[in-house]
Amino acid sequence: MAEVPLLITWDVDPSPKLPVENKVRSLALATALCDDLGIRATFFVTARAPQATRETLGRIQASGHEIGCHGLTHGDEENYDRMPEELQRAYIAAATERLTELAGRPIRAFRSPRVKTSGLTLSILAEHGYRADSSVCPQRVDLVSSNLLNIGWVFAPRGAYRPARRSAFRRGTLAIWEVPIAAAIVPFISASLSVFGLTFMKALFRLLYAESRRTGRPIVYLAHPTEFTAGRQRKFHLREFSPAHIRAHGLLVRNLLYRMGQGTWLRATRELFSYMASFPGVVFSTVSDYVSQLPARR
Image (tube, rainbow, N blue to C red; front, top):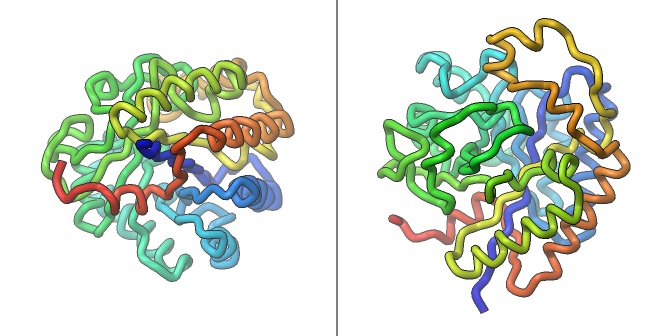
């Protein structure tokens, strides 16, 4: 029976509106959830997030999980689809250095803040020794993420590929793997779980599972630990409707679509993970371990 690679990935954002103790607790909940189900996951950590400490990252790694890089600040300026090259190089270098020092080992996987990337970004990552990036989501509908409009996603491959220097969304020869977030019209992410519900996400997984059995494509799920400890946002400010803010964050009115509170979100995530683990051939893997098994060229 063909194996179905399943990659659970967590984006550890700074979440400035959330108390630090909630951020640390959310990481503990996400780690415990994976540990209870025997899942090895990748935690993409923002280098300057308050919860990015040697102690916290050490606990995550002690459970067999991978620490990846989720940028330096996750601020409005850190949008890799439009950042100047000099700034990209400075941010990636600083984030990599800090996380390597905290984790005590090289950092080999990257996901950009708000999943915004470019061929230039991937070229710089390859220069720093990164083996994998997971910042592309080849979907057709995007109502629940901060990357509101990205035509490149429409044309991007849906399986792992070597990207091109001129485009992160085309096959090429860069010495780094792009491992796309799973999608089939709707992205396979925790926001979709809250918007569409558990029954829908189980059906989406069955579709992706059948496809993976045929093609060998990995199923990459994206979630945020802070969803387990943060309340639903209902208030908006006028600045959030400015063109600059929308370019960076998308339409935050999407928060009105979310139906799950913290406890419900955690229970639904546990049930979804348990459901996925019950399927024959499913093998949970970190992003770096997955790409280490890929052929040198594809």
